[in-house]
Image (cartoon, rainbow, N blue to C red; front, side):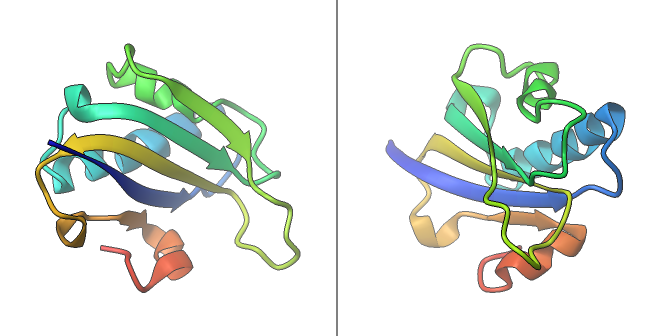
Amino acid sequence: MAVRAVRGAVQLERDEAGHMDEQVSELLTAVLERNGLSGDDVISIWFTATPDLHSAFPAAAARGLGIVDVPLICAQELDIAGAMPRVVRLLAHIETDRPRSELAHVYLGAAAALRKDIAQ
């Protein structure tokens, strides 16, 4: 079993705790499903949020999905002029037999524009 990393992002419509929970849950669920993973395959997840998001910790959504026994961390993205607003990104470290070339990186909605080269 190899250790791999998978990426994802979603743009929120508004900075509201319930909306963040819903959108981050959808993102994390899509990452797991598209890569054939369960919570047991997750080693850790790093979440980042753009500086305009203040309502909740993105990691709380993972806890709500039952991912309670792995390290999660939240950080703030760099405040770059012209960057897409209200974005939550994730970098999940996983155990999988899939080669890197078969990993599905998930960019939902408008966030697909962030990484057209790897968005699925």
